[in-house]
Amino acid sequence: MNAYTQIKKAILHGELPPKMRLTEEFLADKLQLSRTPIREALKQLESEGLTSSMKRGVRVRHYTKEDIKQIYDLRTLIEGYAASQASFHRKHQDLKDMETANESYEQAINDYFQTGQTTVEHILELNQRFHDNIIKASQNKHIYTHISKMVVLPLIFRSFYWFNENQMRLSLESHKIILGAIREQDMDRARAAMHEHIYHGRDQVLLHIDDIE
Amino acid sequence: MNAYTQIKKAILHGELPPKMRLTEEFLADKLQLSRTPIREALKQLESEGLTSSMKRGVRVRHYTKEDIKQIYDLRTLIEGYAASQASFHRKHQDLKDMETANESYEQAINDYFQTGQTTVEHILELNQRFHDNIIKASQNKHIYTHISKMVVLPLIFRSFYWFNENQMRLSLESHKIILGAIREQDMDRARAAMHEHIYHGRDQVLLHIDDIE
DNA sequence: ATAAATCATTTTGTATACAATTATCTGATA
DNA sequence: TATCAGATAATTGTATACAAAATGATTTAT
Image 1 (cartoon, rainbow over the protein chains, first blue to last red):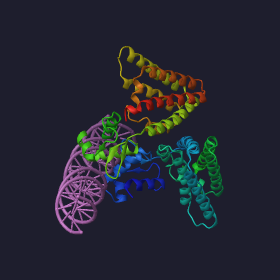
Image 2: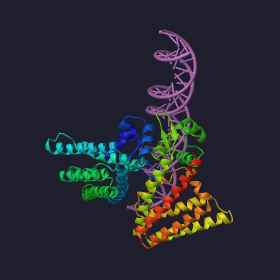
Image 3: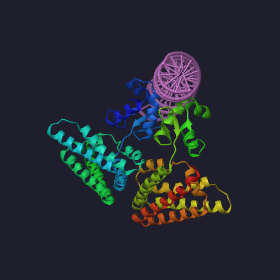
């Protein structure tokens, strides 16, 4: 695991919290590396919007409520488009992949609340897998580049939502509706359902965001 | 001008053509720098999609016809959204800025074809200015991050379009229609006109692309 | 003559040293 | 006490040296 990956993970997990100053030496010491690979990692992270740099020094980027809202708006737009395109282009294999992802997702949710035999991280991963499959099915290779920048909001901003059973089950139902529309090649419905799905997620995050800041 | 900016410019101007291999030493020699700043620049460029790296070495990224099409599709989606949001949020100053940009644009086109007293680069800049003003008026600060990645297609891919007087004048007319819709706060019309405007640009590029590859 | 193995060369990855710049502290003066 | 200048420290920017890895060439065995 290289410097870039490690620092990114630390930011996403809140270990390096928003607004924290990151000096090269500090990170070099933390990761037991020289400054050279750290600097490269920081340049990458900045291009991806995880850090912001002032005249001197780099800080972990802080997202305001308004930022979150705007990022979700764009994510809605693009993933809605992806769902619509997926409806058009979906191959047999795409449908199978989405179904599998969704079944695992449902299974994991059940496990989590019945036996506690899985983690929220795992559930998040499976949710992500469903969304990724839609992007893959859309056949537009460039969507992923942009979405990956949007999903990168620190996990803390999203996790509240994901500890609530009702919300998880609602989310699962949305997935099923979206999948149904894609199967039937109902482009408009797929887009609308995806819009609604992501807007709902956004609202949940915004509802709880004051607890964080 | 730092290493990153210089290399980026060289790629955009076709000086470092698609698929060309970029070794660190070559660039260090070319820019009269050591490898250290070069490596940082390359990491940034890769995050931005201007280069692609294999196991060993970095190449200037090559865009296929399909890539261009897909990137334009996304640009259409997002700039259409920007136009719609701009219609809603536009302040007095935004309208003034767009008008100014457009007037300069018209002036430059006239100058170019009547007296030859300006350059295509300058015309391109003014076109860009109009588009940037719309993004600014949209009030969504995150749009720019994504659009800037899309406009970065090597200039060669776009310039054919821009040497044709008819196309330039058509483009100017589109701008006027878009501006009118934003002024009247007609969100749907603004979006539709922007969609049409960018799709048209896309088609022009795709028409001429075989000449390049 | 072909394939595998070994060696040489190229290129990248990392550490370290030093230069350049910016921030911080200290004390003198108004 | 407040503020400004100069000195000092902290931090980033760049160059260079060497280690590690990958590629390419050459030899050797079958």
